[in-house]
Image (cartoon, rainbow, N blue to C red; front, side, top):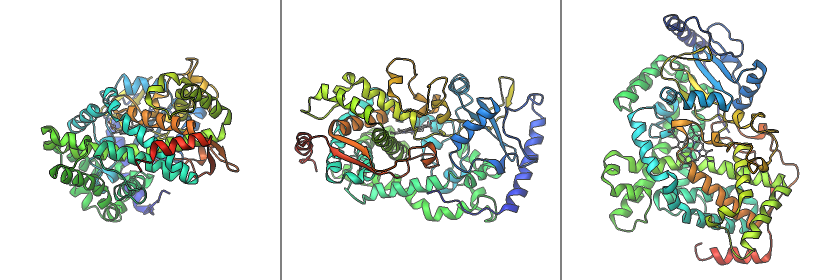
Length: 523
Ligand code: HEM
C-alpha cells in the first residue's frame, strides 16, 4: 500500500511558482518559441496540471485523456516542468527508437537516487558512461545465448514450486514470491533461500517498499526543483554520490520529508546490495561457493575493480522479483477466469507430455498455444504499465510540436498494449490473437529502445516454464467473485492484482506422484 507523506501546501505553491517563472523565461529564449507544446489537459497559471494529475492508475487516466483529446502524444505541465506521454506504438517507435540518442536519459528521481541511496540501480541511472558500463556487463549475462545457462535452475525452481503448491495451494502468492526469489538468488549469488522469512529476500522486500514510497507524486515533486537538478548533475558528471544540496535542504521544503525517510529505509537499500555479496565473498574465500553471476564476476578482474560484481546481482534482485511475481499472479488469475483457454493449453501439454513427465524447455517448440497464452498475459496485464520514465536530452520538434530539453517522456505501456487498432477487443483475454500472425508480440511490456529491459529473456523463460509446469499438473478455478478489472490492480511502478482466491487442485493422482518423485530429493 503506497504511503503519501503530508505536503506543506503553501511552501509547495510558492516554490513551484518560482520554478514556473524560471522555466517560462528559459522557454522564451529557445528557437522553438513559435511552436506549441503537444496537446494536453487544460493548465492553470504557474502550477499547470499539478492539481489535476491522476491520483492512481496513471496509465488508465492518460489513455482516457489521449482519447478525449484525440491525440496519442500528450503534454502535462507540473509547475513548468514538462511531462510527455506516448500512448501508441507508432509515436513510441518514432521517438524512443528513431531518436534514441536523445530520448534515453532518465529523470533525476532525486528521492530514489539521492536520498534513499538507489544510485546503484541501472534502471534509475542517467544515460552516461556509468550506465553504459553496467548495462554492457548486464548484457553479457542476460543476452539470449547467456540466459540458456540459467534454464536448469529455472526448471528446478518451477518443480519446487509445484511441490509447494501441492502442500498448501491457498498460499500460491507466497509460493510465487518464493519461486522467483529462489531463481534470482541461485542465478545471482548461488545462495539457496529459506522456505520462510529468508533474510535476503526480506531485506529486498523492504527495499522495494522504499522504492514504491519514493515513486509517489509527492516524492517526485523534488525533481521539479533546480536544487535537485544540481545534485543530479554532480552524480551524473562527477561520479559523486553525496549531495550537500539535498542533505542541507530545510525540512519544510516540498518533498524534503524524504530526507527523514532515508534513516528508516537506507539500511535496507544498502543491505540489499551488501549482505548477499558479503556471503558470496566469504564462501569464495573458504572455497565453498557455488558458481553464480557474482562469483564468476569476482573471478574476472573487471568485476573486482569496478564493483560490477556487487551491482549486477543486486540489480537482478531489485528489477526481477516483483515484476515476474506480478506476471505470474496475473497468469493464475487469467487461468482461473478462462477455463476454456486453460483446458486448451492443457490438451496441448498432454499431447506432448502424455502425463509421464513434467515440462522442460525442450518442449517449448511443440507448445505454440501455451506460448500465445504467456504473451497474452504480458499484454493483458503488463507488470510495469506506465514503464519507467525517460528524459529528453535536448530540445526537439515532433509532428510540429515543441518538446523541451529535460522533458520527462513516458511510454504508456498499458495504452500501447490496449490499442484496439493493434489488438482488437484489447480488454478480452484472447491468446489466439498471437497465433494467426495478426498481432505483434507485446514487446512494449519490457520498455523501449536503449533502455528496454535487459532481463526480458530470463523473465520470459521463468514465466514460460512456470506456466507450463502449473498447467501440466494443476487445474485452477475461481473461488467466488474474482475482480480482474484494470482498476482492481495496484497503482505504482509495478502493478499487482488485488488479492484473490482460487482453487488449485492436482489434475490426477499420477501427476501428484510425479511431483513428489521429482522434487522430494531437493527439498
Ligand atoms: C515480467 C518481468 C519484467 C518486466 C515486465 C520488466 C519490465 C521492464 C521495463 C518496462 C523496464 C523499463 C524500460 C524502459 O525504460 O524503457 C525495465 C528495465 C529494466 N529491467 Fe526489467 N522487467 C521484467 C523483468 C526483469 C528481470 C528478470 C530483470 C533482471 C534479470 C530485469 C532487469 C531490468 C533492468 C536492469 C532494467 C533497467 C534497464 C536500463 O535502464 O537500462 N527486468 N524492465
